[in-house]
Length: 244
Image (cartoon, rainbow, N blue to C red; front, side):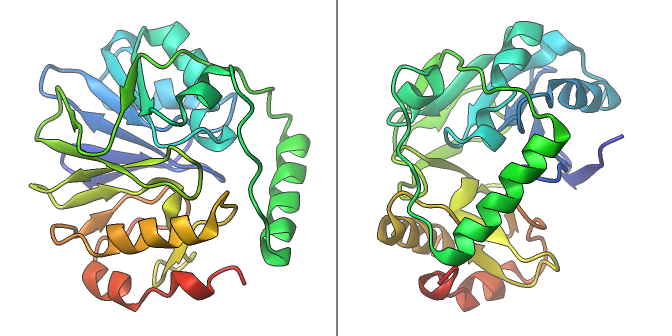
């Protein structure tokens, strides 16, 4: 059984070896998922939803932070099982729909080694092929998500992909940064996510997120969520030198 951890009273992390999923309780007895894991993860997501007392049809929204396989991988299966709406950044929507091939990341030697290990692990685990999925709502910088427990601000954070987004919940001081930001395994450092299509854009997006005032909790998709000492950790980050 995959680990399900309460992050706040309305946010839970479903941890995977690659690409965590976050479930968010909505006021209408529904739920939203932020990202969906690699292909084949839908049963684990639905099991986590059941452990929270939810039924498949209560998954109302799937918010994809970007188009990569470990984030949109199980979206098509979850939509088929739940009827959830899919929301994603407008510039990544064509990649998620499968109508355009997404650009390849520009990899440093350290990043290339990491990606080769990850892809070998996917092959060894028998990860199914990626299936595209329709994007029902295209999101832009400054948009606000409807139906959440509080106002959710959408931030366009390009660089990892052209249309990556982050979600900021200022009232509860929670940030979902997508792959712009990860943490080290011990949770003591915030690092630039590897595998960016435009490194300098990604660094600028990282700096934008790190400068947000109302952030105490960072729900990273890779690594350990930041929950204590967050301001100091973000201030000490050096994305310019990560993955060199």
